[in-house]
Length: 353
Image 1 (cartoon, rainbow, N blue to C red):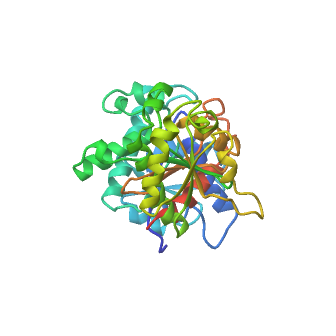
Image 2 (image 1 turned 90 degrees about the vertical axis):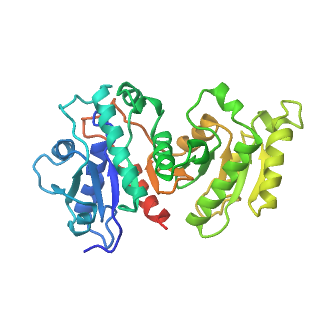
Image 3 (image 1 turned 180 degrees about the vertical axis):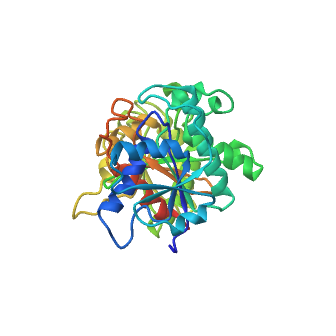
């Protein structure tokens, strides 16, 4: 019996590559036996038929993978390598074609995430790893899922509801990380115009606090945080904008007074070099705080989607996810790379208190 606590993996959109990359992660452990299999003590919180379809896609002769239905998370601790434990938490009414946006797929994906979030909040599982869902399908599913732009907001809502708090009292931040770079975002899935409005003293300071608290757990020490400016050249002393002087610098100063190792603001076009980890050379900083979605995610994704991990910071639970989408263009073809899923599972284990 495994001594590791159970981790739930949600399948994401069944029309995408989520179920396939989960199955491939289990297949890697089956083909390459190791002392500590990545998928040990993991189970799929989803639907038996969805995962059997994925197994049939990547192991059509059933030589290496089998599926076992479990009734509770702890049963995953007794499942041997080469077996995918599935806890039936939602049902896909009909088999859907790969690569298509479908409301039923969005509903199914959302229901799986809600179950896993509530299980994590009850401490029935130690963490959840979420395979990609499709935001348009989630919206098409209707209430209640159409009020959430993605995983992050849905998890924030569930955590706040569980705690009896408002969403504003449950601030969260997105961190994307790979072997070379970590980036935390001040704002996430909003329009660029709204993102600019979100760069306030309170939001920047809250982001620094959340990054400090979460990365301290991961690193075992206080992280060195490089803060990006908002404007070209970080405003160039006010020539290109005053947000750095009036908002970001005061937030950094307050964070420093609280013992947070925050420096900047640095020019957005060069700040990521300070936190980039190169072979044999320690990075100057541990993480970059970026002011909005694309400012932070373009560089980290350019450096490698294959090992990238999305982490939701600030929640009273551990949640990680592969750093890519549903890949409708290759779904159902057996071509999906599971590296980011494997990295997400590893990261989840590192973050478990």
